[in-house]
Length: 380
Picture 1: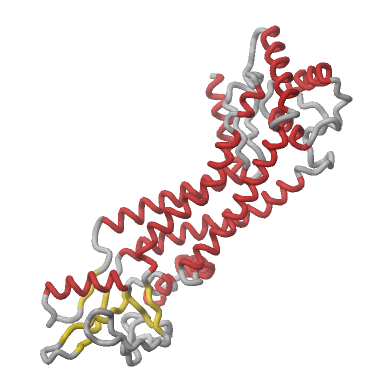
Picture 2 (picture 1 turned 30 degrees about the vertical axis):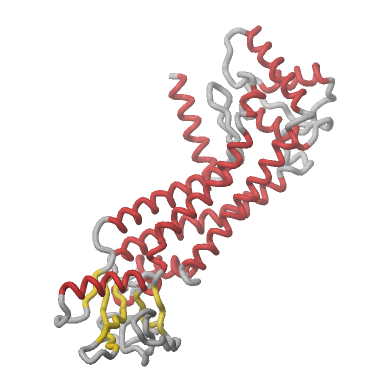
């Protein structure tokens, strides 16, 4: 029965954390494992989990099934079609940047391409490259699994750094005072032990503990905001508009040819295949390619867009809380002792969330350390 109550408190507290209604791991006192994960760390771990699931989904689709299917006409032999398909996947496909083609066009983004004199290296002809105006090449979909894996690691990195630096320090300071002890003498002894450990840590580790926490939260804020711009750069500067267009399309009655998602992840693209003709001259062939992989990619990035936007919108509030909760203002500090440094206050604030009967713990601290009267209201 007690375990069920503890699980209920843990579940409710976790929901409050994710909603930003609680700042640190504020599970009520009792037989729970102490931790110092801020709401920012919690939300970043959640975003990293979503990104990790996206990586699994995209990677599975990349290696299971066909990524690309190309055809260059009925006259092309099957063996050559396979070569064209592999070539187009390696070198990338392209679409026309101008999607405002006539409504009768079967595939927006495809159409006549301006004259091109672009020969791949190694075919015996000096390459003459002319920039194609209005043509967009799509090669980044090959790197989507690697990019998503990198983002998942970056989102989890600040939390991992903090966990390695925290290393059970709070649990060491508690000395089992977060557990309910029926024996009053044992409870008093545990509080006395915890107070002594806290007094000893005041001169050594509390300031460093707070500094690492602040550094990891600032790092988390930077990674969260930087992740948006990294994704935008990866998708050719179209990520910020991608989500808005996707939501408008998915919630409206729009026909598929006008799907704005096709601009970033086209399902059909073009590719130019070069080969030697009967007389030895270079012959170019237009191939049309279907990209089923992008069906998964577009849905994945719609979810990631929502996840990253919500995380980024949540971050400034967390950064503001990070700054204000370090101030000396009584309204912003839950535990303030004039004799304590900011690192000590931070530790006391963490301890207050877990110590059973924190009022008695504070009374022992005042008695044994000779502190003055606390400037805060003791928590019952």
